[in-house]
Length: 264
Image (cartoon, rainbow, N blue to C red; front, side, top):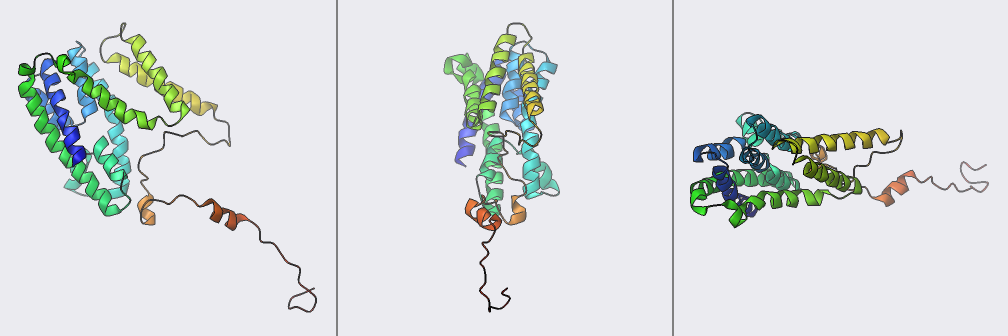
């Protein structure tokens, strides 16, 4: 619930920025109700506010929403929701609900964390979006309150812990540089697509350089959730190197003395 409150509060910034970008109050609220993924929503109104087309705004929002599909595949393998719960779970599969679920080791607590965070963020995000939208005109320029930087700070907070290895950090730096260089020359919303293509190209090049028999470097790219851990009754325990050595080490044979059973 604390995560839901913290996330819901910066829905105020989205509501204010949505109205400031030229959307009506109802349109801004509809984005939170139907799209309901903060990153995609901020990307959408950011492109619109910059004068970009609806197609560019939709492409940028879709690109950032791909991560939710990855979360959905992982969580579907864990929970396997059925019926109407399947559609409800898909709608509230966001960064916060996935992180809360993956932070638990017990199956019941995973389920409780997912639904509590997901539904809590949904209710409060929409509530504070409405507050921000109605108060948008009274607030004046959102930049004076620093609301335009709230989404950027949130994204950096989500990204930073994932940069555990040198390769992911290097890709992030190159993509950021590509975005900065593309902004003056391309329409709003297109630079982020350029950065995505650069990231995909770098990932493909890294994979193609991997020699046969050499494991692919995945440090910092591993999934947050092990979707098959429940088959073993919970999260998989890390392998104990001492036990592995005991299993693989050949037993020392002792020479039997003559006269013993089976002796030579």
